[in-house]
Image 1 (cartoon, rainbow, N blue to C red):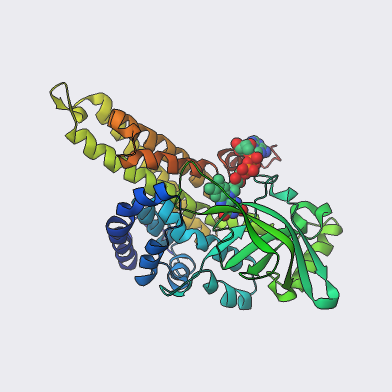
Image 2 (image 1 turned 90 degrees about the horizontal axis):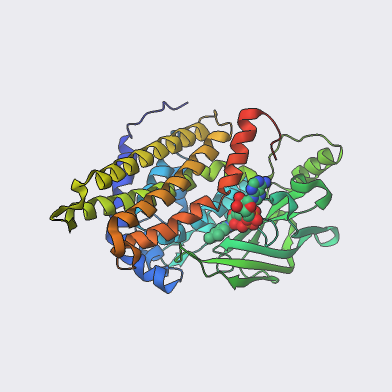
Length: 406
Ligand SMILES: Cc1cc2nc3c(=O)[nH]c(=O)nc-3n(C[C@H](O)[C@H](O)[C@H](O)COP(=O)(O)OP(=O)(O)OC[C@H]3O[C@@H](n4cnc5c(N)ncnc54)[C@H](O)[C@@H]3O)c2cc1C
């Protein structure tokens, strides 16, 4: 077990500084342009691939290869400090890779997880993790996308529509969660790998969003989409065993695949929100020192200085929750609620801090001339995806009470 320490080791300090440099030199200056274009920022992802930041090796090292659990949150905070839309374009594939790592066999992980990133700037590949549906977001137990096994051909046939998939339709690897036995709710579900070019998978509508507009979000339509039997994550034997136990009414102990992935990724998602909040706070602090009203810099008013004092205190409190959850997730003490607590707090802090940053900028903060307006729009998604505010509260409430709170 790694020691919990607030002092980053040498590797972590180097990674933090390296990512910060990239975020400051490449990501932040491009944030406004790609937000306005509402397009996937291929050239910036290419730049990230050139330095090795967009790569399976780095993702694996930062997530699975770090005994403290802190490297990935540190990386994400710096990158999203640069810009959240571009940050998600660079790290959206990580969710698909985490889904494969969470439920795949070791052979499947080795074969498919690297393909969510490709092999370098000339071979950029993307991953998409498709769980949500138009009628099933928070309620993942009621997915309607069906997976039917065709025994004669040893193939799975997928039918349904996935909603809100980050990189949906443009990804090279879609990880799709579908129901095999709808009578079993979440225990009747499994996840599948659908590579690009498979007949029957296509992009539906691309969403026009409030924020993180450089990140591509779209529906994914599966129409008699046939994939080989070996694309079932975890394998058929394990699935049959799980279904049999569920039918007998026993608990399998195995978590529903999508929930298992979300649990382990929550502190990382929370750290993205902290990156946005810190960026907005820094902008507001600098502006408050410069902006003169009534003959003095506005920061010399307690009303403004105290707002900034509260902002940094909230950010630091949220980061401590994130680091605790990230460390526990790697070191076996994770009871689920810590991850949800960190995500709940970080999302709220990001929304609140970015809103206060606009307040400190006055009218200018309400325009697209200053980045705090974009940061505020970007922050809101952290109250919504990977479990809404209310779903985090539900998870925490169930953990602390031991009761089935509805
Ligand atoms: C930009 C973006 C990117 C996304 N990326 C992905 C992705 O890559 N892959 C993926 O699978 N999904 C993705 N999602 C989907 C996201 O996870 C869902 O939108 C989210 O889980 C909420 O689901 P919903 O939108 O259906 O809202 P609903 O579940 O319909 O919720 C509506 C409201 O009701 C509340 N609510 C629901 N149930 C309860 C309850 N039991 N108690 C109290 N309140 C409740 C919610 O908190 C919310 O306020 C993305 C969404 C967005 C917007």
